Image 1 (cartoon, rainbow, N blue to C red):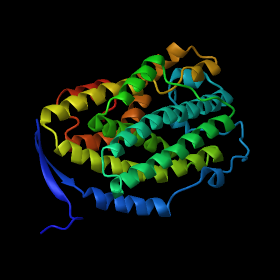
Image 2: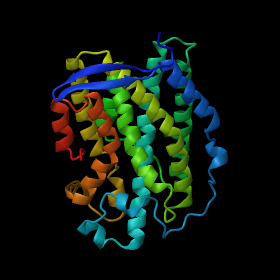
Image 3: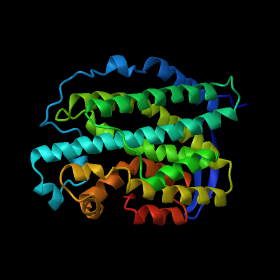
Length: 315
């Protein structure tokens, strides 16, 4: 007889053939993540030096991650203007992170509401919500410490977010969680070890990377279980919906005020970034772990793949 903690396998039908998924036990996975949370959690009030000086000549993002890098518009900017653009874009990403984490917290509450309240699986969902609360406060404080205000996404994304929050579709929501978390994780894993980036940014991104690793694991394992339990048409429908949402998000997570602050026309700057081979390669690179996982679980099956490719998000 298999024990509770032994994984099982499931086969899903994809257009390129059957895929075999290894499904971990919910309680065993949650137990390990709870233990990791006890050992590796942070208090931003204590673990971030909020008073560390900010050098006006030091970047807030590695230059290679700034949207206009290797474009004529970037070449025309002074060093201080490039630093300012990196400050604006880092704070825009943080604002987007707060918005997306609020949606994630709602999704986790909906998920936990439908599960056994005394299970380790629900205990970890609630633990992750607590993590995300701290992250959102931390990002907001970081933006204010950098001398800026948080921004909301454009009106369309903001309204779509309200609609999405009202609908309980765990397949899309766990996949959407991975899209946002894997994307920000890729940027932050380059940022926090970079000694040429502002110390306060390195401290904040380091905390986020360490704690988000658990969230990514939780979402991946649950998404595999959900995929294994639904018919192929439902998986493909969810995958296509997610692909469309991701393509929209990828083009609008940076607030246009960042371009205006360095004297650029926001529309022209956005077009320049969208046409930049470096930027397109950077965005595809940032989603590489996510898309590799989606390939494995059949979330690039059917029409979804073409959307990812057209958006320039698939290597």
